[in-house]
Image (cartoon, rainbow, N blue to C red; front, side, top):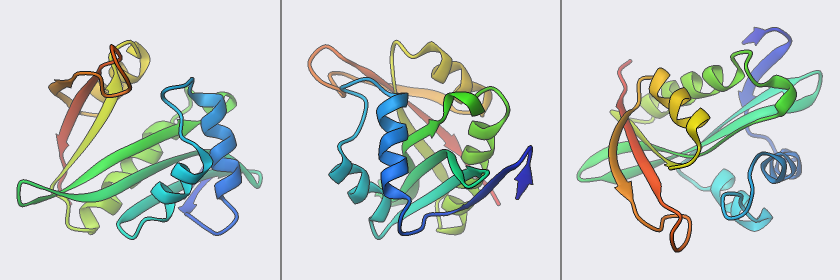
Length: 156
C-alpha cells in the first residue's frame, strides 16, 4: 500500500534497531521500551507488526499482540510510533487500520490499548479512530502515572 511515498509492510529482521530508536524519540520514560522489551514485543509469537516505510526509512510502526481476554481474542496495541516528519498526514491512521485488519484476520473481535491520561493528542486520535473509554488503570506506567484503557469492536 503506497500513499504519499509511505509503504506499509510487515516486520523484517533488521527493523528492530530503527524501531527502538524511533521509540526513544517518540516517548519519554516511563512510556518507552528498552531494546530487549521492544524485541520481545515485536518478535512474540502472537505479535502482529505493521511497519510504515518512506524512502527506505522507518516512518512509523504499530505492534499488536493477539491475547485471550475473557474467552475472546483481543488485539492489544502495545505501541504506535510515528516519526515527527510523518505525523499529521495519515500514517498513524493507516498503521492502526492495517493493524485492526491483521488482528481481525488473526481471530480478534475487538482491540484494546492503554494511553497515558495526560496524552491528549493520543486520546483524541484514538477516539477519532472509534475507540471508546473502558476504564482507568491506576499506576499502569508507575506510581501515580495512570492510563486510560480504550476498546473498539472490529469487524471484517
